[in-house]
Image 1 (cartoon, rainbow, N blue to C red):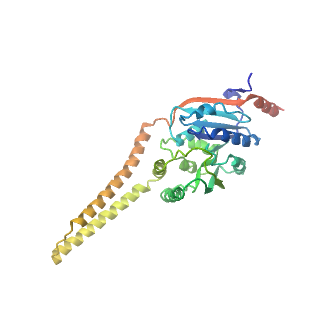
Image 2: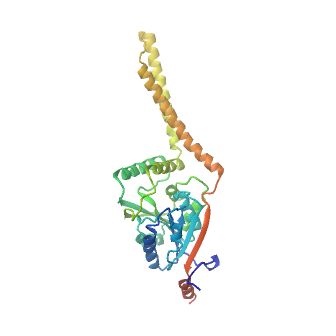
Image 3: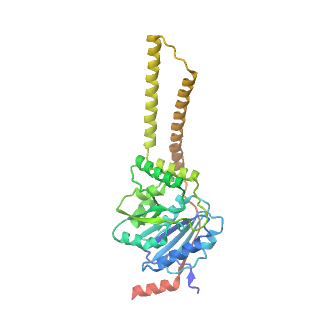
Length: 336
């Protein structure tokens, strides 16, 4: 019998750590990432599992993951039926995880797996969430860094939940936090906000984020703007209130301006002239109205998606592999 084989749920050992790795077209970096990750996990005494979630890759990444070597950690390969987006791929990993502690990490090696022992150390101190804050972001332009900083400030200004600045998806969550996140029913998922919303005891570790090991980022500015809109509208109704305030200010200004014109005409006999000024006011009012209608459309669109209650993702395949020789040895040690 081959030492690498499928295992049943009945034979699954108690898992302490689950490492979730969502990926999309990362065939160039996955071998190096897996080697570094397994090297770290093999140095930890706790039972662990690696959950790779393929988000509809088209470059053969899924086939590569299914053949990666298995050492001390169980390797679970989940293949989604198409590209559902990173937020949903992470949700799939969270729902399939079994560990008492769960770590999310990207496969591009911008977030170093070597920090996992430090994260576990903070978790053992009683922290339910270990945030990994980037103090330096290599490989990113000045515009992207500044726009990200502005977005976090705006999001925290309009949201009731304080979302840590420069903290991405790389973090550790306790089983209690993961269970609460899995129980959230919404379809429009902004995971950075959902990680923070349950609360519980949190701590932060700062680290230097490196440039991508290889390949290109899958996040262009249009996708980042869409993600920002998801974050703002998923965790706050403040934009709707701001639209109401803005509309009230514009309406009050128009009313007082109209009163001034009427008084000038009746008292002083001054006839108001100026086609240009009238057009500027009308265009300004039209712009404000379109902006508010678009904002309402964002919220209505989210209500429409939530009302349909379609699944977040569809799993096409699940492949679990473990090193049977090591597993049997671990069982014997526990019985002794």
